[in-house]
Length: 223
Image (cartoon, rainbow, N blue to C red; front, side, top):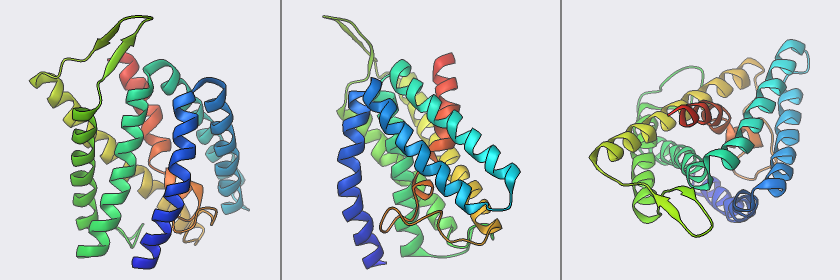
């Protein structure tokens, strides 16, 4: 566990600053970055399903839609909520990994043998802690004009909304993880690739995000 965790930390030190640069820049920079990620994720998916042609097409189409929504999420909903969603998904993965490896316990499902009930609880706890810290330390800008910004008033109702939002994002992220795990089990592979040391493939790391982003883009756009 220690060596695997060290690999994850080292690769994250490289990945996170690069990702943040393109996300913060947005616009053409983000479009370029997402295009590269889409091609890599699609390659991993196609490679997994050599004989399942329908699944190849469906998977690549879904990835295209997800990355398409990711771009418009960042550009239309804003940087704060985009980073917020990504942070909750990352903390969900971290919490699940640490709690699962530390406390072990009963397995959650045969779909993913490494998933445990302790990991599920850890995912929710970690996402709540990180999410609340993020909300309390960074101002939520709803509208930014040339010289004026309108900030969100964190009253009780708003706090409850964001707590439910955190739990919902974490839940969908975990479901997305299980869905990708099911497909990996279907073709009998452990990881979708090996591009990220300690993490496996790109799809292994964004399996929750590709489900969360389209759902919450539509949700936040409506409400």
